[in-house]
Every structure is written in C-alpha cells, then in structure tokens.
Image 1 (tube, rainbow, N blue to C red):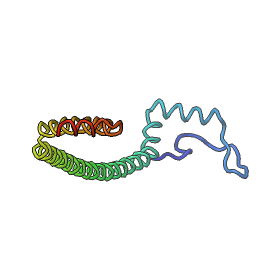
Image 2: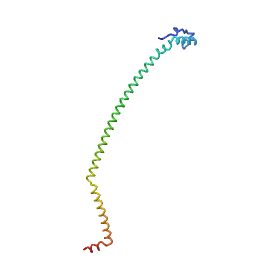
Image 3: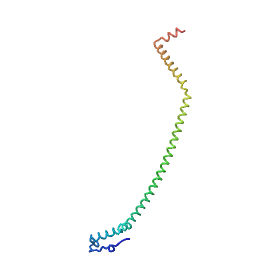
Image 4: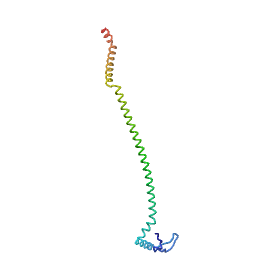
Length: 149
C-alpha cells in the first residue's frame, strides 16, 4: 500500500523549480507516526524489496544454471582425462611386458655361461698370440720351431 504525503499529514509550505517544499518537523512527525503504527517498514518492503527479491531470485537462477553447465563440462573433461590415463597405463604395461619377454629371449639365446667361457678362451688366445708375436720379433720363435723338428 502506497501512501501519499497528504494522507500521512504532510502539507507543502511552498513550491520552487524542483517541486513542493515541506517542513522538516512535519516530515519527521509523519515518519515517526508511521513507524509507531508499524506501516513505514512494511510499505517500504512491499514497494522496493519485492523488486529486489525478484531480481535476486532471477540472478540466483542464472548463477545456478551457469554453475550446472560448468560442472557438466568439468565432469566431461574428467571422464576424458580418465579414459586417456587408462589407455596410456595399458600401453605402458603392454610395452613393459613385451620388453621383459624380449630380454628373456635374448638371455635364453645368448646363454651367458657359454658366452663367458668363449670370452675367457678369446682372452687366453689373444695373450698367446701376443707372446708368439713377441717371440717372432726377437727371433726366438724360429729357434723354438727348429728345436721341435
């Protein structure tokens, strides 16, 4: 319910280019009377707060909609990342398994015990060849071969 100034007992004392003029004491008495009758605050609420309430409600609805859309996008992105991680993890496990199988095949084919014996024999043959080369360079190899004949 909207009150006019005349209804609350305020009468203009004059006019200027901005409109009617009122005595401060008359305005104070009228507002005090409305406060005492508990009509001032409900009048202000009904008039201005309803619009503010409607605007705030609309703003909350828009915010809820935007938040819901953002949450949906985030959940979609999370699902995509999860699928990518799962795929990459599977590929890494598969590659590790294939590498392990390949190393087992190499170890089986190489037979490291036999390879170690071959290395020992090659080292001893190398040492013997160096000794023979030294004997030949000093001329002793020919004397040893003549002595064996």
